[in-house]
Image (cartoon, rainbow, N blue to C red):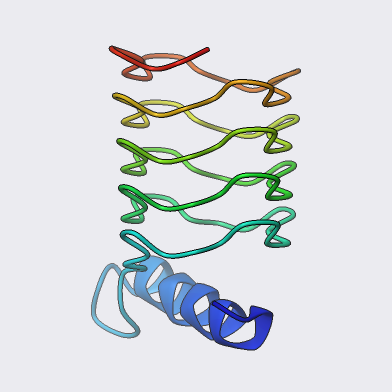
Length: 114
């Protein structure tokens, strides 16, 4: 997915969050190819990212609370200071990912490759 389209998905997701679902739409990036994507500080609270390819993605300080990242490929992703509270990371591949300062409180890491 190119960065312009990804930025639009994030914009609509921000509207969705700000309006409690009355406007915009929840980000559905299930299975999306986001390798190397620039998502610094993106608010993807509750987004669908199951099976997404995020290897090498720049997710520093991203808000991924309650996001569905089950089965996602996060190899070598930069998750420095990312908020992953209550995120679903079941079966995700996090090998080589930078999780320094990341908040993984109540994250589901069952079957994840760390």
